[in-house]
Image 1: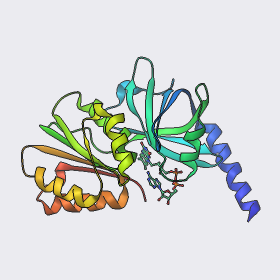
Image 2: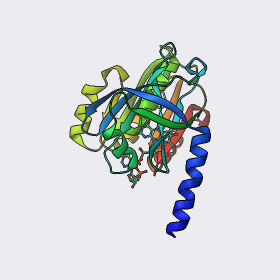
Image 3: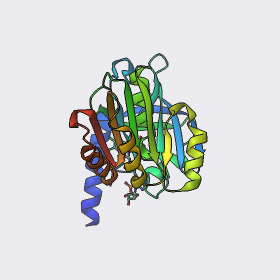
Image 4: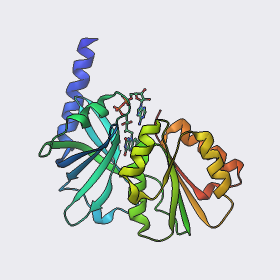
Length: 229
Ligand SMILES: Cc1cc2nc3c(=O)[nH]c(=O)nc-3n(C[C@H](O)[C@H](O)[C@H](O)COP(=O)(O)OP(=O)(O)OC[C@H]3O[C@@H](n4cnc5c(N)ncnc54)[C@H](O)[C@@H]3O)c2cc1C
């Protein structure tokens, strides 16, 4: 068993050295107890070509990788931020808590998902705190075209208050439960030309998608991305 693990680590190490890219931490901000932002310089990233949210596969521990979504990028300085929700224990949470300015970052690559944001009058964001980076990315891509509304679902009342103070520029609210999201959806789904973007916990995303369907929202008006289970 031990031998198999060590062989696995050796193969991963070889693969990693063949394809890994490097970045550097510029700064780390703890916006509130569970929410970190890591600003980084990624010299090899082609940010001018980004037309949909990008997720980057970072090495967070030996043989362990986690995806985080690039937000608020600047193609001239080749810098961007990731927003990591650490309200749970795991290698990703442990990694971000220890990052320091100047530290090297290793990532295996990046990929995009979903479609570019739709051309519509209102973009509705619904997700949990792990989706903050995704929503910042969508906001940048919509480039001021169409209104932005929506909610982050956060059960901890203290984190709800902290979120509203930490991210006023995201211009979305907070809700405590998915049941509250159902009332929000019922209130806004019928009016106007809207696109809904769902992201975060996979079961929550599935539940929200179902609610939208029940409210008569067409499948082409919904873009959904499950991040974790
Ligand atoms: C395409 C994509 C983009 C992603 N973008 C982001 C992003 O921008 N920001 C971000 O924070 N995450 C993002 N994620 C999720 C991220 O990759 C990790 O899955 C997450 O951070 C958990 O990793 P971990 O090592 O800390 O915990 P794990 O070891 O993977 O999980 C440990 C335990 O914590 C639970 N858990 C995991 N995440 C959460 C959470 N957010 N809240 C509560 N419990 C949780 C798990 O169910 C499990 O029981 C993304 C995932 C994908 C697939």
